[in-house]
Length: 276
Ligand SMILES: Cc1cc2nc3c(=O)[nH]c(=O)nc-3n(C[C@H](O)[C@H](O)[C@H](O)COP(=O)(O)OP(=O)(O)OC[C@H]3O[C@@H](n4cnc5c(N)ncnc54)[C@H](O)[C@@H]3O)c2cc1C
Image (cartoon, rainbow, N blue to C red; front, side, top):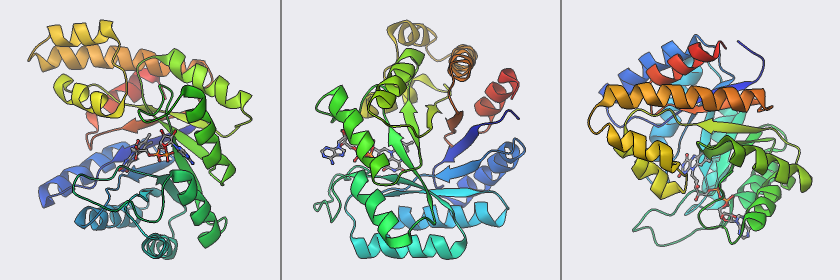
């Protein structure tokens, strides 16, 4: 494998069958010797236990595990207790996020933005954790302006974040411009591009609308034209995403973080094509 920060992201499965499938996915992707596997985290309730359980399994299999931790709707006590649990388990890396308040959850809790969570992690656990934060090359949907978003990203780094993973995007220039703008603001941490392989178009379109990631018109039109022909969608997706990754790595990206949606196939194929 090439030197660099290569990682894979999962969501915590909801069923025993989902957990079994994910175990197979991990086995396949584990052979690539990634820097870490990360597991997403939702605000509130049982989904949080599933993140912890999935992290436990990854750790037990001998891989480096990085739980995501979102602070919206939470208290200092609650976050402090989760950090203690992860530290006791020997976890060394956390992906620190604000998250989004789920509909029906009334209280924002004791944290307003991710920079407050990063400060809290540093105050509570010192330098124990390597802290990853989120970055948005096409800007966060709630940002008041691009510059404001970059300054808010800087707050997280100034609070103690070690590196960042981006929202996914399909336009390499957005990433390079974003990194340049960050460097101009004095932010020097590694910014690893988040890569979303294309497996199903309707699902991708739904995600992208929700999180503000743009599917360029030429891609959207082509993908739409394939209709239900998933093979054509996937073949096109593999070409486009592999080329994107090549461009990013050639342009100096420090690694790649794959949003796997708990499936190994597309990430494995892109990896193979990249010759990593
Ligand atoms: C790599 C990655 C992993 C993710 N994993 C998860 C997950 O596991 N679970 C989940 O629920 N969501 C996840 N998300 C989604 C994320 O939670 C949402 O995008 C959320 O809306 C913002 O979280 P954040 O940590 O980027 O927030 P922040 O960095 O707090 O930013 C949120 C918004 O507030 C603005 N802002 C930030 N700080 C300030 C400030 N101090 N004052 C004023 N404005 C400010 C920013 O410009 C931005 O518009 C992930 C996103 C990425 C990119």
